[in-house]
Length: 488
Image (cartoon, rainbow, N blue to C red; front, top):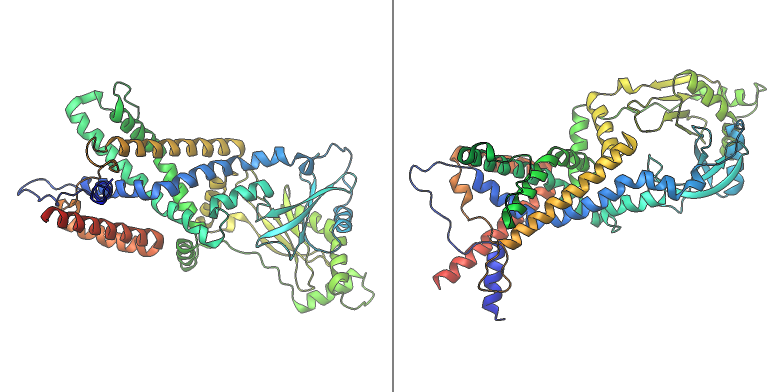
């Protein structure tokens, strides 16, 4: 194939070779051509990133249930009988890893569950801890694993999470997921507008035969593909906007702007106060030695003392209403209180926490979920829902089905692009995009508003703004090249 044929094929795929159409005098203005062109470019160039995010996200949604099966021998035991003191369970775990420092414990919440004793391990990555699983009835360790994050995800879920987050490429790989989250809401809302506009016009022509929420099975070929693409897309649009918004809160660049906005509006998640006063700390150490005027314990002596206090601390937390599935920190500093916090569990909408002075048994601070700002509550619920944890298995199945639907929409979109390709000419040609000059067909006031909105959104969501500029540059370059070839 000659170079000119390849050039023409590429031009037909990235931009049409015809000059921008002129707006006839008195013709109605419409935003549809602009939305169509934006939807097309975003779909063609960003959809691969969204496709990867959809597949990996669908796997991650099922991961909580998968790890219950894969790691059953770590998470569950067949022993019966009352649980031994949590302090004895921690000491049994310390015998397994005497080289590490114990930092927290998650006591068994239900009969048959194991207790999870957490250690700080300098050899692990960020947000990772070593967990030793202990049979609560016998204080016998049953194994150890690396856990990740506040949800204490096990290795399988961690691997899938990192695949979804950055493709196991580290920080550079996070660009892919942020790009997908940045554009997904744009593609979804643009698709809703286009499909609604198409339905509205079809209803004027065909009356009740127009389809909005059901696939038109009387059609075939590209029309049937378009019907599947539009109907499935409009059914999942709200969910896609939700996933995009919650996903951006975890992103690097847009996430920093979200954090700054929440901080300025006082929407951040409140933190419990863990610091103890110097006088309290001194009294606490003496109290730990039964008030005989012993010196303040430090280092390993204090940690061992605090391990022995854990059962009374948990009892104090239960009296304060912080019970069920909890994680209790074990401080190694005399000026730090124990903290007991309820962990995120399915169908639990409020997580309280309490700080306790282990030496005196006094509650030094209580943080109720009801005290959180509304925005912080919504963020917490949104993250839980995004991760498939808020409603348990139902949540996970719904997210997996959403991932399948999104893959269906993307695949049908590419099929439409392929079927739009010219049947003659270059073998490299693919589907032609909508005509150029779409912005000229928009009312000037709306055009100015659209450009201003794009600048603001592009600043707040940087990868969206940068990629949009890149699209415009590529489109302009292809258009200039096409005009030059046409004149020649």
